[in-house]
Amino acid sequence: QRAVFWRKDIRLNEMVINMVDIPIFETHMHYWDVNRFIYPWHQFESGNLNRNCLPKDFKKASKGYDVRKILIVEAGCVLEQVDEEVSWFVQLQKEEPRIAGIITRFDLDKGAAFAADLERAKKNSLICGGRIVLQAFPETDRCIDPDFLKAVRLLRDTGYVLDIGMDYRHNHSL
Image (cartoon, rainbow, N blue to C red; front, side, top):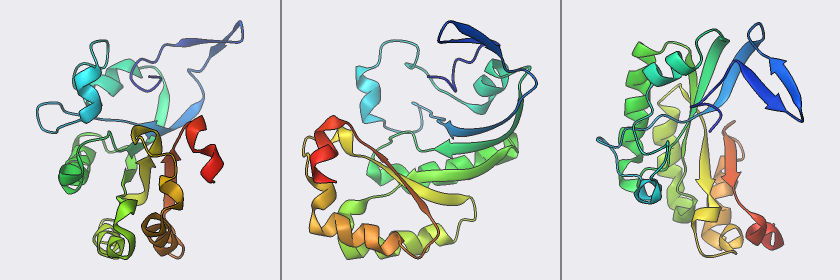
């Protein structure tokens, strides 16, 4: 997890790159609080991710870097808590003013009913897009489901980005 455990020297293809003087826009930062939200993935975690990940952790881990902006990407809480997670991210901006945007979780299985979620999202200027992690679902044809496609079409004129997390099993349906 690059964003959580940064080092001043990152080994890449046997080269050591010193990134201290490069201005950085962190475009994929996850914050999570296991005491506040339910994360289904967390029950399987026993390593370094088995803890909270908060702005203070990132400040410490990125000390010495010129991180100018941060884009928060949802951390996979249960759907019932997505609005609360977004509200929490907005509150975190008071503690971490470099937060420039939020990629929230989009429930694209709602079909046309997803329009109400988009209307709610438009009221929050920090939301710049949404994400769905297809690889978390056993179905491999989810992205060609008619309701999924209706929801995606609703995004067309919003200006929002859509981040789709998938693995090789979903390639056939694109």
